[in-house]
Structure formats: C-alpha cells, structure tokens
Image (cartoon, rainbow, N blue to C red):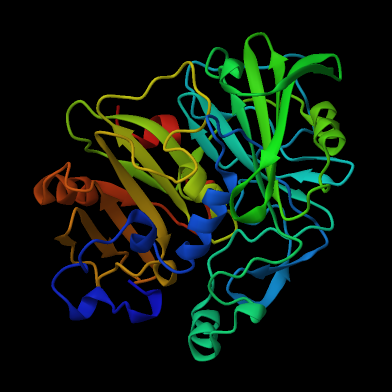
Length: 395
C-alpha cells in the first residue's frame, strides 16, 4: 500500500487489508524500514545512535529538513546534573537510569524506550545526517509529483547518512559472545568488544559493546555511508561519557484498567513508539506506546532488542499506540472504535490523537475494544500530567 493512497477510516468500515504495524501508524514508515535494515547485523544487532546537533536533517523523502534538537521526542526529565556514584537497577525495569550526554562529536539523547531488559536512546554525530522523523503530508505530495530520487524520493539515502542507537542492558541481559568476529579490547578501563563490517545498502556497520557495570553491557552500533566516519576510534570515545543518573520512571500519556489475562508489559516508548520502531522515528512526534506479551520474552542472553532491527512483533504480543492523528493512516473520523484486520482504533474527543491496539489477530476485536475502552488518555501535550509506567500499565 502506498501511503498517499490511504483514505481516512471515517469513510470506510474497516482498515485496509494486510497493513503492517508500520502502515498502521502512518506516514514516512518506508524510511523507518530502511533505517531498521541499516541497523541489521548478522548474528547480533547492537546499540547506540549518532546524530549532529547543528546539522540540518532532511527527511529521507525530501523536504528541506530541520535542525537537530536532541530534546525533541525525548523525555526531558532524565539528566546527568546530579550523578549517583553507582548504577541503579530498580526492581521496576521501566525506568531510565542515564541521561543525555555529549562526547567529542557524539550527542546522545535521553533514552525513550524501556523494557524488562534494556533502555534505548537515539544518538547523533556532528557533521552527519540522521533521518528519524516521519515525512509531512506536504513532502509526501511533492514526492508523488516529482518522483525525483535525487531530491529525496523513495529509495534515496543522503551521502552523509548515519543511523545508530545506544542500548543499555540490565545485568545479565546481554551476551557479548553473540558478537561474531569481534575483537576483545579495553576501553576507558572497561572490558569491550568491537566489530566492523559491510552493512546493508552499501553502508559500513560498526559496533562497540562495553561492560559499564558488573555483567551489565552498553552497546553502540553505527551504520554509515562513509567507510571511515565514524572510525573504530570514534566509537570508543563515547564510553567515557556514559554515566549513571538517578533512576527516573518512564512516563506514559495514558493509563489502562484492563489487560487480557496472562499478558504482561515487556516494552514501552515514552514520547515515541516502543522498540526500534520508535528509535527509527524518534523525532516523529509520537506520544507513546507499549507492548504486552504472553508468554513474556527472555530477559537474559540477548544480542538485540526485542523484535530485532526489523521491528518484528513478539510472539503472543499486542501493541498500544498513542500518536498524533496526522501520523496515522488508520484512524476513524470520531471517537467511535472501529476494528478490522487484527487491530482496533479510534480518536480522542478533539480528534487530534489516534489511539490504537494491534494484535495481528492474536486478540479478538472484543478484547481489543475492551482495552481501548479502559484506556484513559492524559494531556498528550503536557507530560507533567503523564503517569509512571508502573501505575499506567495494569499488571
């Protein structure tokens, strides 16, 4: 399905057939799929992203781009102004324990994704371009008119492109033995493993994993159109900048009073969607999301975030999305809940927010409708009204 062909569900009885989760949540997702493919690693997808603070970041699909604002799409409550002496590992895993920081050319944003096993943050590198937002309707229309790949049409990747993300794993969650062909070394006094090789679409992939605490690993992966930028040495500079921050509960723009029996929350996104889908659109303006699973995935021996670089659905899972209506091609025209093809959706009373549950057929329409009816929306524009994940998600 081409995004410009999608019509509003206010004029239809059910969502179009065979929609992927990307298509459910709106515009610019072809770019997301390319970015996730860029993250892919044979045998292991590792973690840290890089992007520039003063660089103009055009959309993959064209347009003039926008200046990088690290705070955009990221919770601002997590900072490193008052660093604790040691790392905290709260019993409740849906907390952020590090904040935004800068080292040399690297600018790491505050983490936006938390799971039972890790946190994920977007990262940016001065002088390089990272596309992590959905295209606007105006840009999509221009692409449809021109079809000019040189100006950012479908399939276009800027010559200065880099895609990356930082994953901070809880103790025991990450298995460094999964890094095939990695070289063992010491970086800033810490045990580390580094590997480089050819990535997809002619990109160069570099990965650095280091032990930031006992049996606890941070993983930085970059995928760049340049074979030398960043270099192995560039990646190693980021290690010294990672410091603990006071544990801060992840916030969500909604609360739930019903979850089907047996399902447990396993991952969420705050100011973004959950997982690497959320990181791929970190500045897309989405509000939040969560993934529930039955059974829950393993919390040890991991080599990549849940769902992997393709953002695949977890077995036995369903997802909740809360996004601006303009970012979704699957919203009804009013607050009426409509279901079809494995998901249900409706809008907020003011029509500006789309609220969706997707289960790919694992849940009945009745169950998904019950989840939506029990979802209480907070003020999406004021995160001081948002709820701590521990209380927002029924467990």
